[in-house]
Amino acid sequence: MNARELREQTTEELQQLLKERNDALMNFRIQMATGVVDNTRGARNARRDIARIKTILRERELAVAKGTH
Image (cartoon, rainbow, N blue to C red):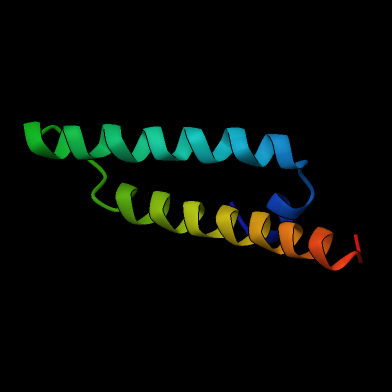
């Protein structure tokens, strides 16, 4: 998921997506521990998505605080 797609979503949708990606990362770590992982890039992709979502949420928070939203 790229930043443009994320910016089109509402704050509530982004928070829900953040929760889903955190859950996916946790499930991936459990799968790594049990040795049943097929896609080893899953954790990297999840971490990057989480970082993108947090960045956009922070941008919105700062815009509201500044009064330009």
